[in-house]
Length: 192
Ligand SMILES: Nc1ncnc2c1ncn2[C@@H]1O[C@H](COP(=O)(O)OP(=O)(O)OP(=O)(O)O)[C@@H](O)[C@H]1O
Ligand SMILES: [Mg+2]
Image (cartoon, rainbow, N blue to C red; front, side, top):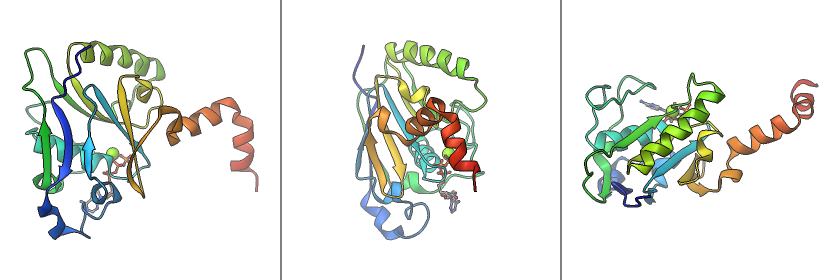
């Protein structure tokens, strides 16, 4: 498997400091970005609703030259009508120039509307593309997708952004505990 990344890390330019305290720089995930190393194959962004995954991914995509309004590079921004100015303050460290056949993908919750079986099928497709040398950045809530082994998982939250093992993600633990014993969790949730 090829291991050379197209995009190797993302960090904030010093220019971001002038905007500290204002959205999106006020988000812990942006404030604590540091030098965010990306996996040469797949980097997942997990974490609670509203933690800033889409904001960050959209900014990276725009800084990479993707069309924010959902045009030429098959990237669609589903969360809001316009992206923030964060992309202007991101420094992107690029690895190699993509060679023929390889692609750089930015996916925001690709599991939306996919059945668990389709998510499993997506893992196979993801693996095919990774083996062909493509690199992915994926925001997801899916414990199925984030099980992909050739990957790095970042969990976004109130503390910022941190690297986590698959089994330590909140998504995995909640789903695992629920499936293992639905009655126990329902009892906690539904009883007064
Ligand atoms: N234009 C904006 N101005 C101010 N706040 C915003 C704006 N757009 C988004 N936000 C806020 O920024 C936070 C991060 O939003 P974002 O959509 O990036 O989260 P997310 O991690 O992708 O969430 P989800 O898992 O629900 O997709 C949220 O609290 C959101 O309400
Ligand atoms: Mg989102």
